[in-house]
Image (cartoon, rainbow over all chains, first blue to last red; front, side):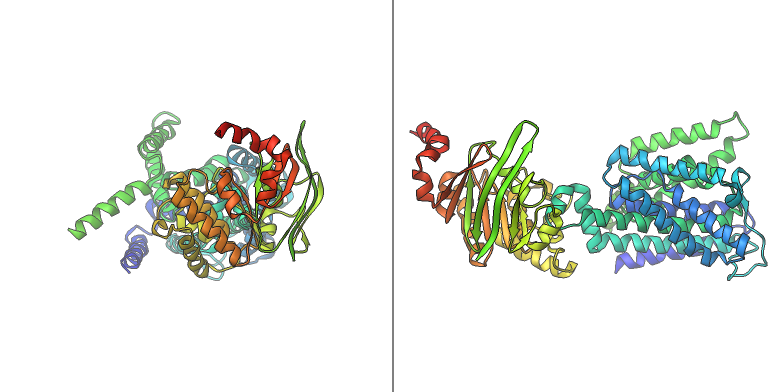
Length: 323
Length: 241
């Protein structure tokens, strides 16, 4: 009961926050991307946290989603809302194709194989000029603003769509974690041989997880395309700024927990923006350097993620409440 | 009625013939002991039965269905599972969750939770249900293994040294439990080093030596078989004198 009140309070604050920011300003953009990256990290958390398969190739699905919906608008005038599901479908197929050969790999080998897959997708998008426009990139065409066309004059609706997406993927994550599938995934993570012997179809469960994560990541790609309006292969298929960043957000926040990716995104995205804001006028790369130092410090301080800070605060709070 | 029928099972690892031409069949409801010196192939044999290791040749029929080449989860669904000698629990999960996960083979989460508590009660570990499995003592973990295997609802249960490091009281409890499982209609194959325990509870004993079935009979027959005595019991009995 208390838990529900807390969750509703957080959602209420998140729902009011965009209204307090200037609708044309810089910080509403930061907020939108923070929410979007939190959702992406949550989706990564399904495979990276629950199945313990550290994917470094989630940009592949993200880019597929961004390109699918945008190409459908450009070539056929199909609403991005429909394009989002088409992208999700293709993202799921891509996830299945990559999961079948990589499923048996663990740890570093799985990470490297998925990283390579993301890079392959980036190269394909750069080369397949007739479909993707190649390195020049694609612009989402301007259409008269309406909800049905997923087109808005301001960033505010985008912030709310990102918030709703974050809530939906968090609910999906938590539902999986608590379901029979969640128990099976924990078993596979801790001892795959024992999991098989007690009746878990480890292959099937891993494939299901990969496909769910791939579908959702591709759908979020559409959200990104609609906010960014312009993108190229090196942005949406980026190993550093998509694949590794979403993994980093989830790991820094607390991998395998529903709150972890949200805490991670609330820290990483604004701090990164702030560093760019403060130091980009200095020497080239200075802001990245400072951001990197901050990340290292945080990882040394809380190796198991921000969730541990959150947990100890909660413990202190409930102790005080009791006394 | 035969529940488990094993014919000519062989398996080689490089230069080592781990199992060679193992043949026997078990009627439903028997408690069968599997003994033999270290490295005789007992654990390899269990792993072969549940599908973790594929035999080079031979056939295994579980309740009339061939299981050679099937994946372990299929074999578990058909009704045969095992415990792990080295204990392979989900250490970061609670004791209850370990057992509950096995119950999901045949039940939804809520029913599996109830089944898991029943299984934990049977092995006498209901009081530690919410502890992390990794924090238990070794003998307790072996009993969680047993409860977890039991919660899959097996017809044939393979127990690999679940009595290791137990004190005499605990050992008696596990022996009583094994008998009560048999009374429930479960067929049991038991690997155990403790001779007195195995001679007491088993209806029948198989002796493995260098991957070969050396003897097959009642505890009395096996204990008095000169081949067995020479290969295995003799030395340890001499040592005890």
